[in-house]
Image 1 (tube, rainbow, N blue to C red):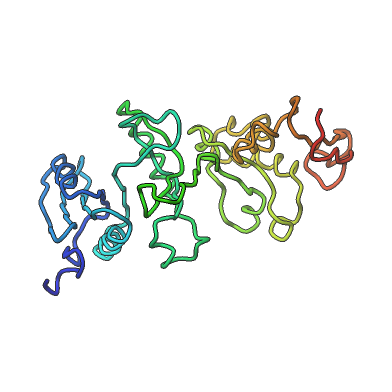
Image 2: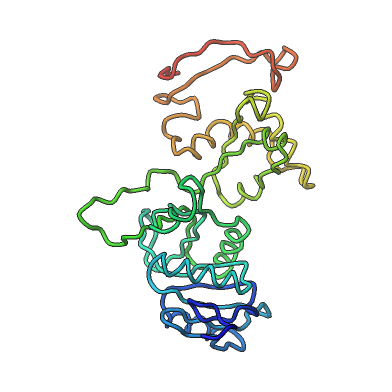
Length: 302
């Protein structure tokens, strides 16, 4: 190792492209690199094999990290130290959801942190999630290529094979879902969720209120009223209409929680907590007054 190399991977300390594709198998890294223009091998030390080249004019690095999260995180850290800012992980996985066929692409929106390493680096509450821009770009590319693909949460588990302990299934945990706390986002300056794009991509978007500390009230109808016009600021007068805003507060919110079969609409057998709104009362639809009715109980059935 020289002073110009990083200690684990032996890659140069500077000069790598800002974008990288990372894989497990060093042979796969070579196969991916063969698709690039002007591909050159930068380094090959232990399981860490690194190439650089370009794809349609964009400089790209391709690197391998072997099996498992411990080796992968060492590669990711040194790639970042060398200048990489965008990572796309390309590998194999076992399908847990019905309908995913052999060879289908799975675009990970987030991951269950069961990898055995990140728990030692970050608090367990910290989420592992993909940049939405990368998810949408990968989905567009898969559609353009006509490749079967799916989106959802990926379980990253240190012990890939089952052992004596049963595997807990995350299938019922709810995939491809998002909750939008619009009012608190506006007050706290957190920005506005790209709801029209999420809806167009088939993501279940639920609408609700945040705590009174950050949003001043717990007025769901007020959130519905604000959700409809705020997304038209982007120039599309058809974005998030009134009906869609109501659906986000009801059936789509239930779908985002994985409870569509239990609540979210007035149907026989579903749970309901109906209210009566007097539209003639000023402020009834999105104000602090005008809501009349009584709680029907969690098990009320219309």
